[in-house]
Length: 138
Image (cartoon, rainbow, N blue to C red; front, side, top):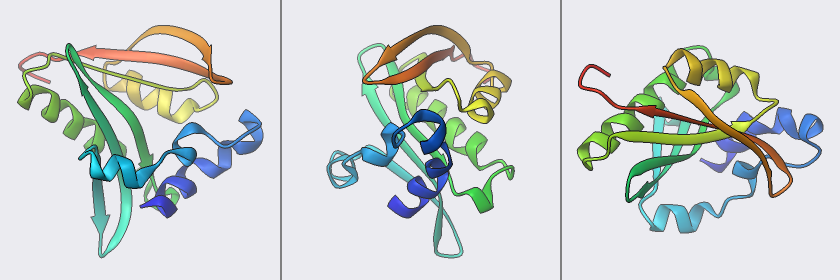
């Protein structure tokens, strides 16, 4: 799982100037808290999703897809799972952020009808915040 996350984000270290936040997360604690969801293919983790339920929305903390598995719909599947999980919990909104240099992620979220809700520098990362309201047909 950690290898998948590191592979997904290591290409951004030079652009950001430091490891992206998902590379620094304490995955043992996140697993223990029940916040980690994995997608595997033939015994290899190809996707990692980390979520956190909050009172009025589901926060998506990490969406990581192994580079060799990108552009195969795995990111869409992970985000779709997060949306299903939000509905299951009775929440009608999903929120997340990504770094402003992660253009592929931004394009994916916009294609999935996520709208930008803000930008700010936080913990040394230039973050773009996005959200989507869940309706019956999404």
